[in-house]
Length: 367
Ligand SMILES: *Cc1c(COP(=O)(O)O)cnc(C)c1O
Image 1 (cartoon, rainbow, N blue to C red):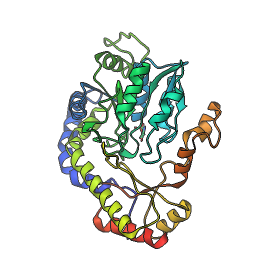
Image 2: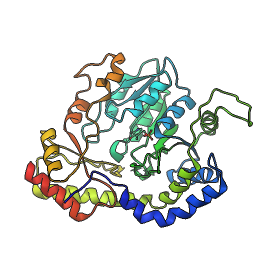
Image 3: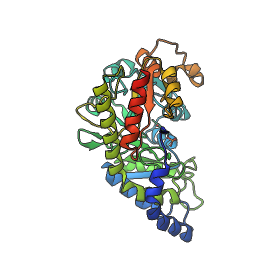
């Protein structure tokens, strides 16, 4: 048997009948830039997340970058973030001229260790940027309390957590702004790049609307130096259809995760399975386990037709791109340890029980 770490083919087969009409409609209308479907998808996704506004942009990275700018972050500022995330999170901070300041992770949830945030705050700190990594929500109550007490902005990175709940509220509804990616493999993915910033602040929304569209007010009147970063109408039309399936897809991911975890428990394998806090509805963008001798395990899985990936092998403080920050090995030991052991098993809504069973059996034969 062959099991890929993810595939988009099955989802496309399931929905292709539904998306043909809307795609054709956009083609016929010619309104490819900031067309009707963008406005409608912004409204629908904002309602889904429980916020007032959504502003469609061209990627998750730009959503983070423009959200930081809209929150007034720039040169000389510091933003608190974990080094255990995809590098886009910190690149967006760096693009504003601000400096990412790292705080290590909690070993159970792989999210920022909230008990270590206060020590990292300085006079230059402007914001905290929590990442709901792998689809597990950050413990937002204590984080928001610190932000409120210290007068800091909060920008959520929800790129892996569409539909995840914290205490029965959607992620993306807690921060001053929150950022989603619609990269094709995300829980809600377009047929290309896309992103959105969510906010309930009218002021932040207004600023984002200028920032994503050349700072344009009239057709050729510009009130600030903006960017060209818009969600395509075609992508918005596709995403509107896919949004109707998101809860069902997330539920399937949860069932797949529960089956993996149950089978691993039964077999009593030497493997750390994902944790779900009691406040959380995890949406398993990834099903990430931890194993010893990861390199060998991956190789043997591959030999048996099971493709896996590592999210992520190098923590950001040890990436060459960030050597200017002057970090060294040992600075964030939990992140470093997890980067060395973490392994993403195949995970997508359409994964079958047989495939999950095969992955578990194969792993059992290796460990
Ligand atoms: C995917 C991702 C991003 C970036 O989104 P793009 O749409 O690829 O630019 C940012 N943060 C995290 C945690 C991600 O997983």
